[in-house]
Length: 402
Image (cartoon, rainbow, N blue to C red; front, side, top):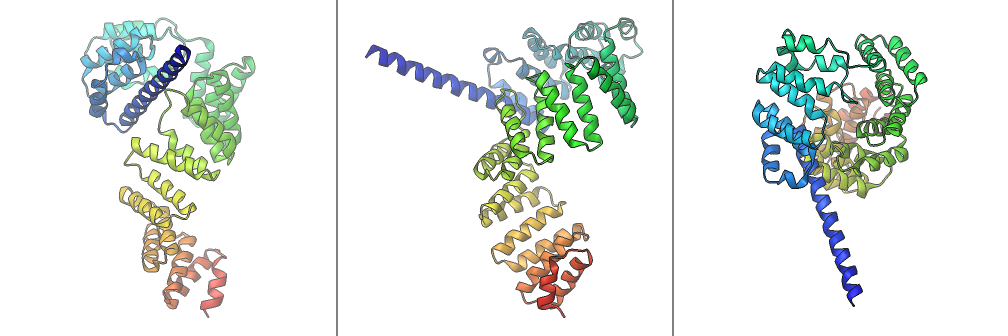
């Protein structure tokens, strides 16, 4: 009997831990999503209701500091960054340097920056020097003296050179630099990432995906590398491989909830409609004003023949953003499926107002007009579609137009 009670207590305690971890994870995703939407006061409000000392999470302190910094409340930002630093968050050193620059304490700023520049995985020299805050002290003695010391090894300097060549559109030179770095040491994950970025710019998505995957293999807990790899795999229509990487990402405590949108799109391609719908709903709890998410949700409902629900989502997408012809076309498709042909014609017309070169929209508008027995208008629109080499129009043209 005692043994059974102990087992029950273990199960209950395990459940409590899981729920606590989930709540903490949700807290991070919630504040990060608010931060990404520039709702800085909201992030501060949420975090002020939590005892951050109990959570003991440097990333939450860093986010709080970032919000205060964005609001020009530098003293409060310094307090939060200092807490993050005590929890060994090295990025806090750079943020503290920026804060002290803003309150006109260049000596204090360069003290923190000097320590930061001695840490691994720091920003490149060009990236540090281009941070807006430091433009205030670039002519000050502490800043000039700071750069008399050397903080970057030859590998980091070569990365910086490659970054510069990319900015100048000299891709050949950048490729040469990065390839040589990788040949010299195959464990250089930053070189693989930058090579992936370069390959993406040149639209070699397959090679870009491989570079990002290699970077992620070397630096296993780097979510940026994994996210870039998953997005490339999605573009390549490698949906099952992308799914594996997306799942790895969302299992990490500190994943960016922004990824849920692409994860849902990937699941939609795999016909995992329930999973896709759940991820879109979760995404919308974080980003309720995102038009594309409502559009994707509408697509999922359309694929599962829930046309009324699809219409609701398409209309929400259009309310958020009425500049996308594809939103109106999909809305027209849903009206067509529900037999609301006049509304379908109106939707296709609005898509064509935005872009009159969409042959598909002319064809679908013509098809809806056929249903309304408006053969004159239908034939005009079908002929426009045909003139754009949209051959699907042939059957309707043959049947209804002389």
